[in-house]
Length: 255
Image 1 (tube, rainbow, N blue to C red):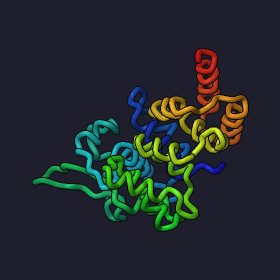
Image 2 (image 1 turned 90 degrees about the vertical axis):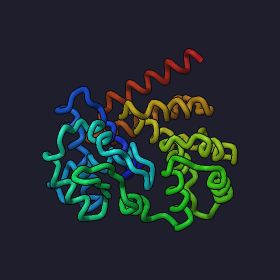
Image 3 (image 1 turned 45 degrees about the horizontal axis):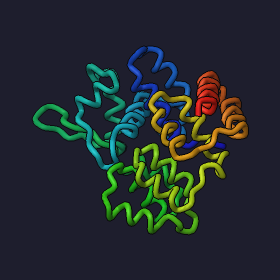
């Protein structure tokens, strides 16, 4: 299964948010940053621009602002001078918006341009649902709208379910299960998702949710995870996938 832009963004953000070894995280992120640059048509000299977008994608709700001081702290940036050109590029190309007060930057946000490029091939109705989930703050009317639209023709319910979990919209994800989505029948999709999760410390909450909602750990599922790891070993760390497989086997033996 082909890796999606959203998966690359999640993995890059995880690497950039890990402040244990700044030199190592930049080196590891560079291995896959160039793929995103090609897909989003971002010039090669703006590697940090992809890191900025990835972290914002990870920590911001859609149309949501994050205090600029908090953003700098999450990225481990004392000053932005080293990535100033990347910020200018993102601003000039309308990927980000900055809020200023006097001579200081108060907040930063992603514009809809990134989300539209990520999900440009969806039908209009499906796009609305994904954008809704990416907002991370569904109120009751929005949740009812989501439920009423779950069986639109052409809707990729599995992808919608995974995005709901990634965006911590657990009530929406639970509703999708209640409406008949069966993770265990979609083992190939779930194996792919678990492989992606294996590459990120910050995705443990996703794995916990899948297990609590009844995902069965079978040899078929584990073999499929390993297949994804082997197919993508040039871009990702196969050892992390093996480690997750061992943890899942241990989970089965203790439950």
